[in-house]
Structure formats: structure tokens, C-alpha cells
Figure 1 (cartoon, rainbow, N blue to C red):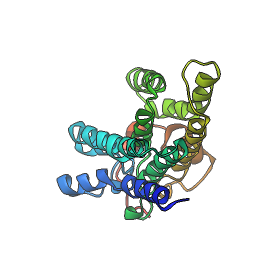
Figure 2 (figure 1 turned 135 degrees about the horizontal axis):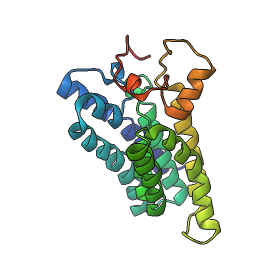
Figure 3 (figure 1 turned 30 degrees about the vertical axis):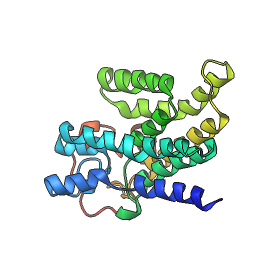
Length: 231
């Protein structure tokens, strides 16, 4: 690994790790976002706690600046597809496990979408909008389960697109999104190292993997107050 490649990957991780939602919540509301709602240090929880007019711009920042731009820079400087993929993975890992916040962070959804934008994965983005946005959010009013479906389906979907010559995809991208799926599922299971009030049991892990929370009802989770600091 050359110094340039290492700099790209480490730089992408440190840039992705900037806790924008935490900083904005601290500056505008004077609160630690880890102690409110889902405890997620991301735009979705920021929107719940401070309003969408704050959450949406932060989500776009996470998408474009943290994920899309570093990959495009790697492309512009003629780095290989493997390096570009590593940069995208590093950005998501930084966002999810930030060294600036004791390895807590967001869920990685905005940054994953930013990676998809950088690789011009418009068909996959459109399918995600239908599954998560329309079916999950607008129709069923709970996008978490459909986000889980999309996370699992995406690597296989990318592979099938290339296999049937529908859209050209380098196999490196399939590997990248398999790694991203593992990272996003790991984040769901570990949350922000917060111990569930009811203790760890199979039901908590099931709720986390399917609905990205410790309880069944979304309203109960997003409107709660978290006692104590996140570890």
C-alpha cells in the first residue's frame, strides 16, 4: 500500500467520522444527541429532535461531503476501483464509529447513499427509494424494516444487474456493498454501545436487526429520553 493510498483511506475515515449531527445539535440546541430519541448520531435522529429543516441539510452534508466527494476525488486522481471502494468503506466506517465520540456514531445510511451516488448507481437508488421511501415510510410508516431488506438485497442486486448485463458493475463494487451490509448490520446490533433497559436477550437483538431499535414501537423509541452518557 502506497502512502497516497493510505492517505486516501485514512483521510476518508477521519472525514466520515466528523460528527456533524452531534455538532449541530450541540451548537443549535445545546443538547447531546446521543441522549435523545434513538441515540443515533445521524441526520434521522437530528430531524426528530431538532426538526427536518436542520436534519435534511446535515444528511445531505453527510451524503455528499463525507462519501461522494472523497470517492470522486480518488477517481479524478486516477486511483483504482479498489482504492475508490476502500475510500467509500472507510467513510461509512468513520461515520458509524467515530473516534471523536468514543467510537459512537450514526447508522451510515446517508453515507452509503453517498457511495452509491459516487458510483452512479441510479437504478439501485431508485429501487431503494421505492422500497424504503414509498413502501417503508409513506405506506407502512416504518422504514427501518425495509431498510433492513434493502441492506441485505443490495449486494445480490448489484451482482444480478451485472450478471444479466443490465448495468455494468465491477465485482469490486459487489464486494464493497457486501462489506457495507455487514457494517450496517453490525451497527444495528451494537447500536452505540448502549445497554438495553431490559438487558440483552434474543428479543432485543431481533428488534435491533429488523427495526434498528430495542422496542417494537417506533414512537416509543424515537421520543424517549436516554439516561446517562453513551459509552
